[in-house]
Image (cartoon, rainbow, N blue to C red; front, side):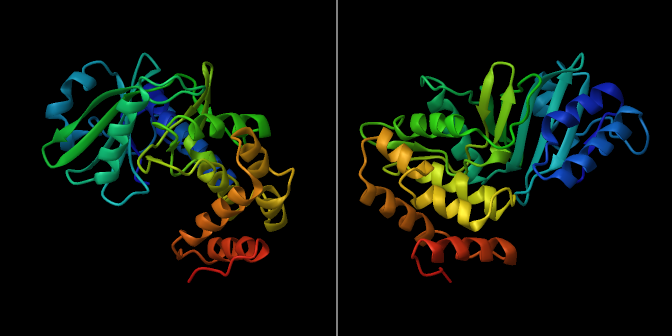
Length: 286
């Protein structure tokens, strides 16, 4: 992770903006890290953004606390700036040829004018800075990990996405999962639009969310995920009805999702996906 902060209360406030693990042990470790930062114990960085600082001075001048950490994406970092303990900006710093990050900037511009029922980060800056491509958004105050969405919340978000594309297409987030959803005082927010696209895949985000809660987070088991994907009263069938789709179209969407999944190196994730695929009658992808 490599968390670097300016230390003290403001450094801890900045760390809370970007260090929000979805797993329980990760949340415990994150809490302890932020406590150490708040107490100003251990190493600190007076300027966590030194590598790209000159061109980002206008953001830094507004902040009195900062934190920066390595992203799960190779070659990328994420930073937060706070002022007076309140979040101001979130910055994603990638290589100049970071195409997913550029895609996120493009979709944040596009979604800015859409009437969505959930929050999307407000893009304030996106450009090449030296050898980096930087995307800056306004940070949300008091944002926290959303946890498992309720049935109505998930159906509400995915129904909006399914009907938000141009013409009859859909706005596909691409990685709609618990770790990309936050709760704020102003409502639910969806972040990390790096794999977003417009496509005729109205059920894809819902299917992905359901599968990921079991495959990655282990919040649900194979029978539960299978039921939500295939049962007439499951989530996929319910969203299909809301969108005016028939059962065969829902089945085709489930099959297409698993057919398009590349193999993963984490054995338990692959085993879970294979278990669901087998249960819905799809040969495991190798």
